[in-house]
Structures are given as structure tokens and as C-alpha cells.
Image (spheres, protein in one colour):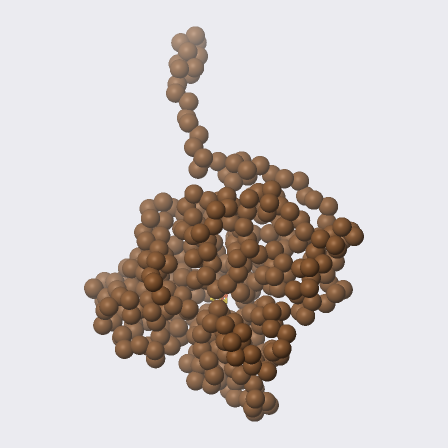
Length: 363
Ligand code: SF4
């Protein structure tokens, strides 16, 4: 008995590394703040309400304001930043986000951040991209179920099979893919830089995965032969050319801006095709009187908050995955430090190379 005890005492203790601890263990859990709409909360958030008053009725603001104030206070305490995609709701995009934009802008800005914690206002592949570019930071996503039909349309094994079928053809994958898929690629692309990325490869043909419609649009913009996959965005694939023609019949003066994830018959009807960032630039530069953005609904809400002279018409479609992210869930992330993005290190090394190659392109 004495021997056994001694042996136990002498056994070397396992050294706990930072990575063995959960984010909650590393940073601690904080108590829920008071969420009443007090005069102090009203005063502290009045300037933020000014940004969204065109899209959020005054009667709804007391619901959002206590969360907005609590989140902005907690960002200081935690040294955290919030990255919000253009499809996030206006109260997130305009009132608590530190960086806003399309997937490319968020990926680029995530790489520059000196915060300890990144909270991703967006879907899972975006949070993974932030983690790839910030391996030493803690990246949280407020709802782990926030997925993407495009990211789920292709697996790493699918890419390996395509590489066997098309040996030597470079592989460019949309940023809307899992880290495991990015790990199989030569480079990433976004809807904002797709043509430039494809042409940067200097190859006569390129595998562009997984969005079939984005690939078809790229093919109209370049001489490079594009080989595509059958993935679709469930939000953009629902638009039809017929819908746009009806809109024009109702109002021939309307300007139609469409995202390249839309089917080709929609893009044929559009006045301009581009990423969400390019659509926003178009509105800023051309100041159209009436515009319809053929994309996710929050895009028009967020841009309209900044463009009071342009009237934004529907239709639009909601992304159910983006809408899983809410102010209460962002607050919960900052208090409890859940849900943390963790990527297998062997996958992360290869996936990071694909993302960094895109970020470092001088385009
Ligand atoms: S809008 Fe489409 S591409 Fe974007 S996250 Fe939703 S499903 Fe994915």
C-alpha cells in the first residue's frame, strides 16, 4: 500500500496547455447584466438608434437597446471585436459590429485584428475563416447551427475525387466552404474577387467549387475554362428571371442589382451583377432613385440605413442560417465564451494556405 501511494505521488503531472482549456476556463464566465430599458440605456444608445431609425420602428428600440449597450460594454471588458456580414440584421450590423462587409472584407479585417476574442456575426464557415487567419485568437460563433447550403454541398472527399478526375487543374474554392474543403484547394475566392483570383492562377482551366451559378457567371467574365460543381445557395437560387421581368413591368425605372449566386436567367435581367460589397458601392456611387437588390433581405435594410435618398424595393429572400445570430445570442457568447471554433491543426495548416493566398493577392 505504501509503495502504491508513493508511485502515485511520483507520477509526473500532466501539464495543462492553453488549448486544453475551454474558452470559459481561460476567460471566465460573467454574470448576466441588467437588461431593462433605463434612461441611462436610452441615452447611451440614442446615437446608435439614429443609424437604424429608417428600418427599426421606435417602438421596437427598447427591446434591442439594453442588449446593444450590454454588448458594447462587454466588448471593452473582454477585448473583443464583432465581425458582421452584410446579411446580419440592422441592429447587429449598425449597432454592435466593429467590422462589417462581405466575406472577403471580413476575412481580410479578421487578419488585422489585435483583439483577444472575435465574435462572428455570420455563419460557421466565416467563423472558421476568421480562426484560420487568427490561430492564436479565440473565435466564437453565437450559434453553432448557423450553417450554409453552399458549404454543405461539397466535402473534402468530393474535391479529392475531382482532383483525380482533372489531374493538374488548379482548384479555387469559394470562401463559403468548410476548412476541410479549403484544405484541398489551391486558393480561395469570394464573389468580390472571383474573376481576378481565377486569372491569377495563369492556367487554361480552373475548377471553381462549389457554386454552379457563381462559376457560370465567372465563365462569362474570363477566357479561362471553368469547371464547376452542383452547389447552390438556397437563398439566391429561389429568384427567377420572370420575377425580375414582372418588377420591371411594374416600374421600368427600377435599377436591378443581383448577386452572382443567382441563376443565370436572373443575372441576364440585372443592370449590375456583383458581390454584396460591390452592390453597396454601386448604390453609393450611382445613387439610383429606386433599387431592388436581388439577394438576402438584410442587405437592403443595412444599405438603406446609410442611403436615405434611395428607395429600396422588395423582393428579397431571408437566409435562415444568418438569422440564427441575434443580439441575445451575441451577448450570451460574450458572457459564457461559447461556442468556440476549433479546427484540427493538420487541416488548419493547409486551409490557411488557401485563404492566405487569396488575401495576399494584390487585387
Ligand atoms: S445566403 Fe446562401 S451562401 Fe450565404 S450563408 Fe445563406 S445559404 Fe450560405
